[in-house]
Length: 378
Image 1 (cartoon, rainbow, N blue to C red):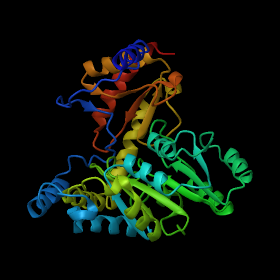
Image 2 (cartoon, rainbow, N blue to C red; image 1 turned 90 degrees about the vertical axis):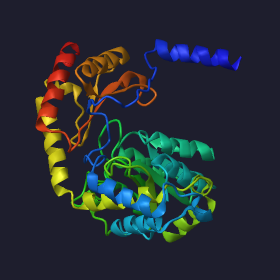
Image 3 (tube, rainbow, N blue to C red; image 1 turned 45 degrees about the vertical axis):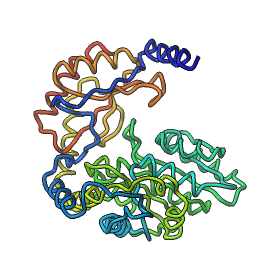
Image 4 (cartoon, rainbow, N blue to C red; image 1 turned 180 degrees about the vertical axis):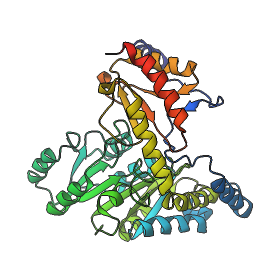
């Protein structure tokens, strides 16, 4: 019975052109789907740091953090991120997904009013669902609506939740406005900076640095930094007050009951952070590539009004999105075809991801291929 129901659901997914397929990454496509915004995924100095760490500490951690799998490398990373972002402490997780779920599952409980941007990441929603607590979504980037909802809240404990850069639209939050609202209404402010770290700020420390600087009062702010995008690796860090981090160490099942990430990963991230903080030239190259791409695309009404490395092209038709992706693959170009449930059913799109590693010729090749494929799209 279960398999029959599953078969029917899979058939329905395929008929709606929503079936997703994995492909082994063996072919060397011209890739415009990675989140490797600074081109650090293949950086040799990061590789060297990781190899040196493997020779010193071994291939894995051997156990969970609270048994015997926590190494000085992990502590160094937590201290480094907390210091450069000006937080009291930080905790290193396997992924941003785990970190988001862990925070909401363990910290946000009891009588809380939760206000989140409608387009927050799926992992934040999973964190909400795990605590089975009611929450209020405000329209995307609509801070007037958010303030009205905050005014009507009668609970003592409140939290505003936002992505810094929204992963499918590429637009950004107004963190200055959100910080002001959080102070005015005495709320916690939770910022998921997965796609901002490395890209924004004079030192690449993320959207908060870019908009407000890192030395502001952060007593009511919780900050998520991930290392699977601009840092070119994997893992994530929650930063906040020492009490919150200490509590997560004691209560987070996502942290306690899993083998710790290998120490070489932490050492690789530490090297990556050094490159990010000195990466002004990389960020300038990235911005130059983004501007060139937007200039070369003919049907600019299909572009969204964003200036960052995430450049969606709104198609609004699942089959056309799939067809264009296939046409580009035939020209050795890989872009992401994004459909429901990642975005609403009527907002399917190509998600173009620009990187500092791309050359001018790469951008021109992509634009030419896209212009040909988009010529029949209204």
